[in-house]
Length: 70
Image (cartoon, rainbow, N blue to C red; front, side, top):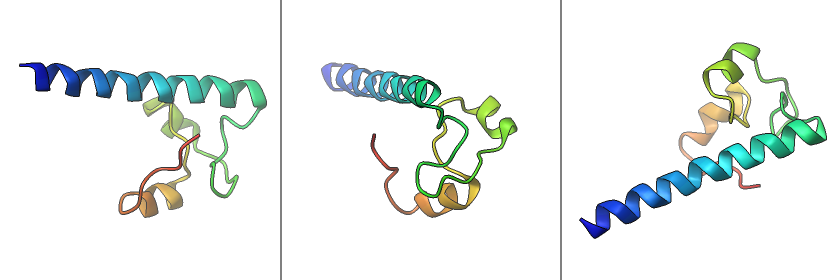
């Protein structure tokens, strides 16, 4: 039971970190741009995942490599 709790706690912390990063990006004007190449992130993609930080190209690449940390 404790292991499940720790896993859920870690997942919640990741979600909060993603939200914090999205808010920082809103503040600095980079919210709609890929963190890797600065290409635009489609509004529909941001609607589906408001914490998204990568364009389609880098998201596909990132499926085999870790996401950038911020």
